[in-house]
Length: 436
Ligand code: V47
Image (tube, rainbow, N blue to C red; front, side, top):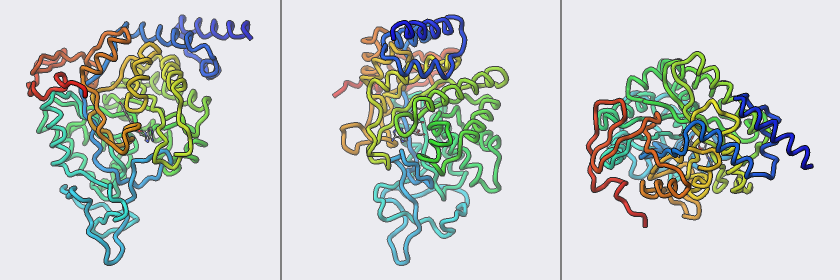
């Protein structure tokens, strides 16, 4: 009914003008409205109030250190099981990935003997620290300001592997920002450390080793029903928030994700966003750090146990990004991760509340390239990122992980407020790459 529609939109508009938080009813109305132009206009108004026409990107590289995982999340096509070798079975290491780390093997329920990989999972891997440092170095020498590192919950790697990894990257690439480990990994580390460590102790040790901030993964949807249906064995929302609260109290900035388009309802998405907003209110009031951005992740069904589901449509992607902007006005940035929303939709979303489209990425293993077979080579050059932004009527701003502007020349980069600058090899800089 038109009269009802007018009342609803006026109510939402009035709340936004008065800086009042939107309710769950408002959020659902926004999802259910067919008027996506008004939705875009409202979300864009919040985006412009916060960031004007600036649109952020970074020069980064994602590194996934292992796809072995003790969890079996139904939405995930990335994990590979880690199984003990049957008697007389095959050699234990993934081809080309010799293990090389310090510290004792933690015991697990599966086996206390030398780790053995599942011979059936030929694409299972774990990277050595040398391999990880080589990737970080490669990125650094091409001008990257960030490495984004996450992996599966490996049953055998000791806590030292993760601190050694950060320390080795920090030594080799002193100014690269290490954004690493989801809340789920942090909890895993606290359990495998010998002796066991608290979340706070884990975070302090990682920060001492070079960790700069944390990505937002592992949040999925904060709801018991969805949890039981799609990721039953993963820790729940309470634990996820505890890790982020501890990080914020320690002054470690983090991001927050929402994985949408699988078995959850729209109401459950809205509740998820309200929980993030409420947490942010607390962090802003009493912590040294807070969430920098919300990253709504569009579910990619291929290869997962939920492959029979269609995944979100383009319209659902656009609405969800805009609604994230409107429901969480106290979280500074909304990121469209182009790997999952596609570069085309990420570009359109820049006028629907989004102000950040992530970065060059280079290689992404958690979900494979759409329509590209099984490839993990997924990169956008800086030239292409900038073109997407300019064509959307925005001003490209290269940022570092903490959203400080990056000053870049053809062979150096520095961050506003810092005295150092990094020299890199101009010939291999992604700035000079031309898209094929
Ligand atoms: O936690 C897993 C999600 C996350 C699928 O903080 C899937 O800046 C879609 O958190 N389809 C890891 N998503 C990635 C992540 C992330 C990515 C980019 C930027 C940031 C940031 C964080 O990926 C997992 C899970 O929620 N995921 N499987 C899938 N099939």
